[in-house]
Structure formats: structure tokens, C-alpha cells
Length: 54
Length: 242
Image (tube, rainbow over the protein chains, first blue to last red):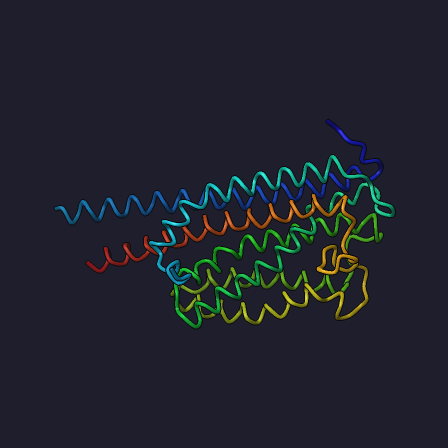
């Protein structure tokens, strides 16, 4: 489905484009950092448990 | 049951683990419905043409930019007064989301301003106070990164948040305070006569709800990450000391 945006097509599409892009950046960055920290914490906990078990 | 239970990291992790998928699902649904309704099924407005469709991204982002700072103010005050770590970490987690919302408001405002006002930027009270709010977000995040001791960082960023609240307030009420500049008044108000017409109002409300829910989902996710990061740091220090 495509709608007629007339002479402001570029204006409207670029506003939506910037919004989607910036929201994607914050969502991806949040997920990426969450996964990285979760992995690092699991590895650290495993290492310390191994040490405590001798 | 008291709200202070959630200041316990373990309780916060349990509750947020359950809530996060639901909030995320609701956020995505509301954003998709609000933006599709607004973009495809609302007419052009007199004087604005099809640029009126920018309303559905510009207004929610601008509202969130100010209200996220207000949330950071509340959580910073809780940290400064009651010393609950989760609240300091929630403020830290919220700042990058607020920065992105401020950027969206500034960019979409500039894109919208060009055809309407004939300029991308003007030193208008609301635009200028938003730019200052953006700089406060940057400064707040930089301060967290610059200080190694997390409690000292939380104290100093908490104080910065109190100072920045003046500009968050100015961003909201600049149009009323100075009554000049290019930017029009609020699109939504408790006074029904000031609101945009119903045909734009309902998709706008859904879009705003979507942005609020997206913020809640992201701040839960990021606070969980900050809590894990803090535990990781504590374990590394314990290992080094042993």
C-alpha cells in the first residue's frame, strides 16, 4: 500500500527514517550489551565456582 | 507489599524478567498500530499538507525526552535520599534512551521546520532549551563513565540531574514562558480545546503509549544489564583480593 505524500514525500519519509534508525540503534545496542554482560557474568561465576571447588 | 521491595536487586530481577516480554510485546504492538494508523489512514492538514504525519514521531519523542529526565530526577532523588542502588542504576540506564528521544525530537523537528518555517533551525526558546537538554544528557552519561567509583558517580550524576531538571522544565514550558519564537504550543493538553482534532488525536495517543512502553521495556532491560555489570565488577574485585 502506498499513499500520496505530494511535494513533502521526502520530508515525511526522512523524518520516519531517522526515527526508525535511531530507535533501532538504541534497541540493538541495549540487546548487544545485555548479551555481552550476561555472558561475562556467567563465565566469571563459573570460574569462581571451579576455584572454590578446588 | 511495598514499592521499596523492588529496590532489592534480586526482587527487581525476578519481577522484570516476568514483565519484560509483556511490555515489549505491548510496545511493539502500540508503535506499529499508532504509526500505521497515523501514516496511512489520516488526511493531510490544512497549512501542513502531508507533513502533519511527522506529528506521530515528533510529539511522542519530544514528550519522552522531557519525561525520561523527570524519571531520572525521581530515581536520582531516591538514590540520594535512601541510597537504593537499583534506583541509581535505573537512572543510568534511562539516560541513553532519553538522549535518543531528544535526538529524534531535534532531527524530526528540523526536518519538519524546513518546509514550514523555511529553516532547519532557529534559536527559538523551545528549540534552544531542547538542545541544552541534549547536552545535559551527554554530560550526564559522560560523568557516569568518567568516575570509577560507582557510588561517587551516582552521587555526582544525581546532583547533575537536579540541575538539568531546570532545563527539562524549560523545554516543556518554554513556549508559555516566553510566548515568542516559531514553535507552536502543546499538541496535547488537559484542556480539550487546545488538542489536535480527533482524527489525529487517537493515533497520536496510541503512538505516545507505544513510545512510553518502549521506554519501559528498554529501561528494564538496561537496568538488568547494569545490575549484572555491578555484580560482575564485585566478583572480579573479590577474585583479585583473594
